[in-house]
Length: 240
Image 1 (tube, one colour):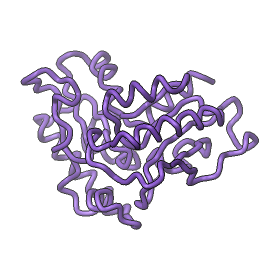
Image 2 (cartoon, one colour):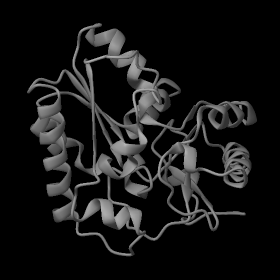
Image 3 (cartoon, one colour):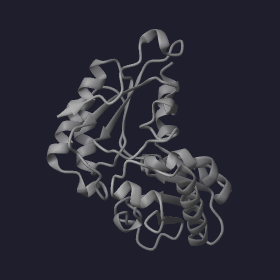
């Protein structure tokens, strides 16, 4: 059920001392831009990819079916066997599925940029204003990320109002206007900042497709931005 959309990177092509990063993707057509974990250049050509065949774009972690979860575990084991030192998925998994995936391999696993939330909260303090940009805010509620009732320190904004990025991802279109998508990301960042009362101390990108626009989002929010590629690089660097 799995396949590799890109050829593996030969050891001679990898930076000295660096091992490959494993990335698991859904079987989608929408283009991956640099900065998205699905683009080979995001990890300097060191990524090994496995694609879950016939697994399409879902809407939130709860939309991932049991057969996909099983295939993700298989893909993770293959990536580890190929030498991957860190594994990430380009889509969210429900908590129980993450636990199963983590148990399937012996290397660090990341299935969502939201895994950085406790660290961001710890480093920025209990009253820090944290923003989350996600694919569709209607599928990411405070309950999903364990926020206490009435927590006003975390603001959530989605891309569902965007004219280019959201339709391209939702409908799995084979083309994506990068300039229009960046404009969508900028407007979403502005809405997020507005939800937070004009002040943000940190932003988490809970959508791999937003990674390419991290710099623009940082500018619009005037705050540090964390995404899935950031987490993978942190752990990957620690293994050098």
